[in-house]
Amino acid sequence: MCVCNDCLRVYLYKAPDGASYGTKDLTDHIRNCKGSNSGGQQKLMQCVQKKVVINKKEIADVKQRKVAYCTEGYHSFRSVEHSGLRDLLQTFADLGAKYGEFYVNDVMFGRNVVSRETYLMSLELKASVKEALKSPVAAGTVALSGSVYRRLSEESVPRHTCYVGN
Image (cartoon, one colour):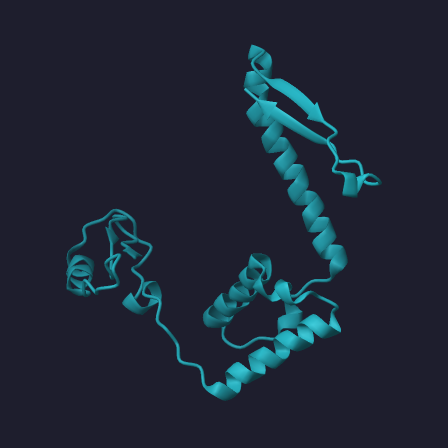
């Protein structure tokens, strides 16, 4: 899918069944667009995801590094499938595409920075929840219900859950 940066019109490169629509409509539109934004158009290759072919040696290297990640860091094998790790790796791939090769340690922060950022994000979330609940609380339409349900296997760990409904 591609979007015109000027008029924000959406163009599909491929149909849902995978068949190609081609690029003629998109290139014709870019030539004739009279949109108001002047952010500049993306090149076609910037909005069409291409399937890269990686050689077997590099794939083997990736597999070995996954094993090292799991064994040296005491991570479960399932951790390499976690969307958070994959999103982080994709972010680095995107940064590499944008800035070229760089040293990952220059942008990979330690646990203290991650902890502080988590705390700041929680404060932002708390403020947004407070703001979202301000009107329903004032109108008296919010109900709170608590639960201390525990399974037998979790007897030593109390679980507190709060349900909010309006």
